[in-house]
Length: 394
Image 1 (cartoon, rainbow, N blue to C red):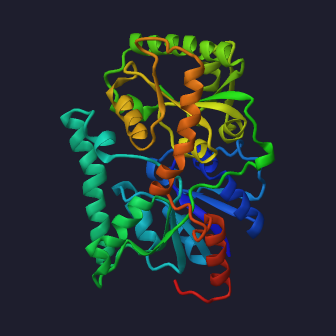
Image 2 (cartoon, helix red, strand yellow; image 1 turned 120 degrees about the vertical axis):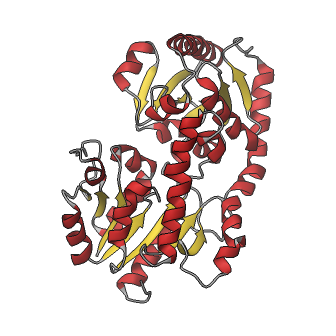
């Protein structure tokens, strides 16, 4: 049986490192794990890069045509993680998966805090509003209609870490109707696992979680960023990070976003240690974590790390609103690096320690952290075993 995930991305690197711990465990347990990347089929571009992955048990498969993909899906018994979006350009892949003897699950255990209106509506012009409505809302409607009509297969299980989103699903009137549903079952799961052992944790560093300020998504949504405002932010940030190093007597580590240009950062942030694909490692060894907005922020919270939310308007309204979204659920210490360089004193440490004590209440409200909720690896492994023993149906 093939265990794998179907994706369509030019950044398999990012996909892999988001759930590296899970993929490595699954490849070890099942001898191999496949990434079926359909990016080439959709974009008509040749894409192949797996040098970032040292695990030889992980196979990167890039079908050259839809016919080749169809043959692969038909000839193999497959347990498939399907996190493809319902966007129209993924439609042909969803249609090919229909009627296949494939058990499909979706995973949403990153616990990402997001808002459709912040990301796609509030900070863009009318043209972009229409564009996002078409590629997201309209596409979702078509996708849902095709599920109702039986042209797209229902996903067997959605594993969901966000407690609030789970409640919306289970209370939806649509789930009570005798119709084809997007997900047959929705099962609570613990947030993304931490692969660092407790004995490896320390408080040696200060970690800055990078948001790639040259990311294409940011360029599209944050059209109010200028060269001058970006340079001002970089200057302010460097001063701020240097002040933190001097005050706490701890080295600052810049943990880069997977899409950030490492060589460019090394030119700009000379004197600071810069790492890539090691964020989790350095979070576990950090006394203090600095961030704007990032899906990995919840890992630092789960590690009970002291945290400071970096506020700036020099990177545009979109990022500013996204940062506010993260601060909505947790009362982080906030430092605005635009207008002043925050005073660093003993009262700051007292406030940081106080905030850590209050994390648990917000975490329990947002995520499934109770003992009864299992990890994604254990849940998936259980389904794979049942499938191998033919105790579950497709």
